[in-house]
Structures are given as C-alpha cells and as structure tokens.
Image 1 (cartoon, rainbow, N blue to C red):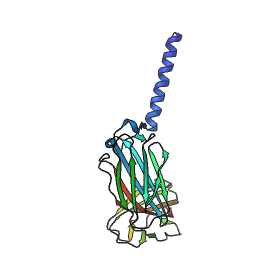
Image 2 (tube, rainbow, N blue to C red):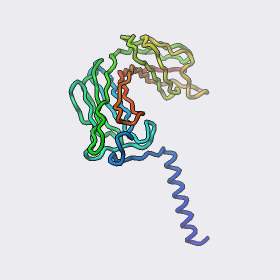
Image 3 (cartoon, rainbow, N blue to C red):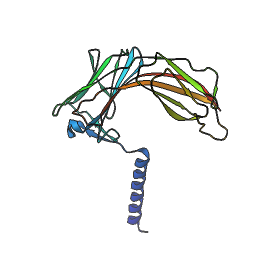
Length: 243
C-alpha cells in the first residue's frame, strides 16, 4: 500500500471512530435564540419544593419539541425569569438550554410564574401554576426489608387530589416507578415488585425512595404546544433492601 493510501485509510478510520463515539454518547446540539421564533421553543418548566422553605424552578428550552436534543441558548437581549410571591429572580444558566432559580418559599398554594422576554420576537409571559400542599413522609423501616415481603409507605396529610408518584432506586435493584391514584396517604409495594439486578447471588443495598405530589400549571400559547409546567412537593427517604 502506498503512503498516500495509508494516510487516507487512517483518516477515514478516525472519522468513523469519532462518529461512533458521538452515537454512543447521544448527540446534542445547541441553537442561538436569535435563530428561532418564540413559537418554535418548547419550554419544560418545573417548580420543585423539597421543604416548606425551599423551591427550585427549572426551565429547559428546546427546539423541535419536548423530546428534542437541540437546546436553545438565550443570547443577549433574550432573558427568562421566575417569580414567587411577588419576588422576581432572573434565571441563571445551569447548562446549555437549562435555566434555574431558587426561592425561599415552598408553602402549598404559592404561585409561581415564569416569563420569557424576547428582544426581537413575541414574549411568553403567561406561564403559571401553584404548588400543591406539602406533606411528610413517615419513617421507613430501619431494619433491612426483604424483597420477598411487602413494604408499606405512608405520608400525611393526604387526600389532596393531586397526582402522587413513588420512585425507588438502588444499586442492587432495578429502578421502579409507582403511580398512586387518589392520594390515599398509603401505598404498599407488594412482595416481589422490587427485582434484584443479579439473579444469582443477589445483594443488599441502600435504596432511595422519592415520593412526589404534582400538579400541572399552564404555559403561554405563544410557545411550542409541547411546552409544560409541573409543580411538585418532593420528599425522600432511604431503607435497606435485602434479597
């Protein structure tokens, strides 16, 4: 093989390697906000309260729908802000297309608004919702809980009418999510529903249990129709899951 042929082959192989690496990593792209109209921006908005005195507001801006991998970066003149109880905070960039603001409030009924201001296009100020009522997660068992036994989770107060979701995650089990209808204040994870990641020689591990009470807000009609606003009270606990 001649030297020139070897160099071409080597370069081609390197390009294939880079392409494969990109596919494995999951491709993401960014877009300057000046290049897109407001109606093309899908805003995924979240207000998450982990206590009665702490709420984080997060806005993820995408082009091409709420599952797109193209993130919108606000350039000079375009800005996004959040307001709670009359207190306005300009949201800061956490990563490409993701903006956050923190507030020292978390009581039920607190209204949050998110406003997107554009320099050269339509603003989107009408994103709003209220936090659901807070709750307390009762203590989880201190002793290891065999996966072949029921695990009952309780919280109070209950009966809010908002959606409740329980998620469990640990190194020795497959992550699982349970939708709880009607906010009954108690839910039993039946024996065998938590599955070991190893069928042979299953292990014990600490498992994080996160329970959320969530309701939907409204988004500005100027934005992409796939925009959403969810407001949640979130509490978490930990227990040991045993084979």
